[in-house]
Amino acid sequence: MGTAQRFVGSTVSWLRSKTLDFYLVVSIIILAPLSILSIYRSFIVSRDFLYDFEVFHVATRLLHDGENPYRAWGENPDLLAEYKQPAGPLNDVYIENLPLYNLPLFPVVLYPLSGLTHDNAETVWFVLQIVMAAAIPVIVMHTFDDRPNPLLIAALALLLLAWLPTRFTLKVNQAALFAIVFAVLALYFDRKDRPVWAGVCLGLALTKYTLTGPLIVYFIVFRRFKTVIWAFLTNLAGLLVFSLMAHKSMFAVVASYVNMVSAATFGNSFPGAASLDGWLQLLGVESRTAAMVGLLLGIAAGVGLILPRFWRDLFNRGRSDPPGVGLLRQDILFLLLSAMGLFFLYHRGYDFPILILFVAFASSRWLSEVLANSDSRLLHVLQGTGLFVALFLLVPQSIIEGVLVPPVSALAADSTQLYVIQSTVTAIPEAVSSLVAFGVLLWALYRIDR
Image (cartoon, rainbow, N blue to C red; front, side):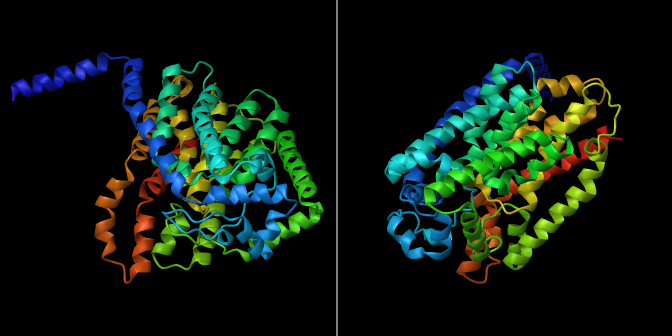
């Protein structure tokens, strides 16, 4: 027993003697092959899936031919049939059931891909997603920290590429990484007091408003009105270019978008949502009702729990915060809004790479400098939660399916219900991570704002 105790004690002492850079190098060595494997497997699977990217590419091709994509989805399925690709071997996607929800600026930005074949365009988009995923930690760490550790940036980039939600978004070639990188750039330029660039980047991020929409509250609360105006103008310019390409008036394009969204199913028509409405549906709540409950609870949480802490900021009434706390409150609000949107609004796993912002914040040197002497308990909780989220989202989906799915599968009454249960249960890492991050950030806000 004495030998075992001495071994444990010497091991603990050895671990404590190592510097942060040592652990970062070890993390990089572990994460590098995981990220490479993740990218490779995602690319192979994406070849066989026709999913979100087909929607994006068809939209650019329709614009290229002078057609209005929103009208095609809302009123002309026969036109869509002329553009759709043969179904991949892993799924049979009916593109008419996957409307283009992105704002007009998005297909305008992707317009250069319209001249490529579907496979070539998908490959270009896949590579761009890798670049964006690698860029997000670089930007966010230079936003949260004036002196970021290059090893930490490298570890975060590899972590993001190895994450379960990132594998999902790469597999289906979604737009989440596009929205996240521009949301982070908006925050970066906001910190540099460059509202025009911040507004342009925010406008680009808002093309996937279901993910980044709540972040507008941040810029309004802290009175970045010029940034919000430039975000609006950026999307207005996108709408103008879109309307010229489609040979329709701007009003006609807006009307076709509204009609398309109105005709689409409100709520989650696909099982496996990691957000609250997906779990409510698992309990038997109807899709529309579940989506509305999630939306209303999110609004209630924002209005009742978060915004009252920022009234002084919104109405420009002075605060006397200790050094660093004012900026810390800003960071927490930005992260709270991103986590709140994940949990209360409809989101599938491919949107959850945005949680890397929380992990980066929790691991930043600046946070340690602000809280080390004033509130070490808060610092340790934030760092511990960041580590939990980082590791939990590394869990392979095969383990989730093997451990959690079999016990609950017995509850299914038929094959349809079994599919819903299996799809939703596999989203547990994303759901738990977003809820834990939201809860800890909310606690942190109340703790520093006493």
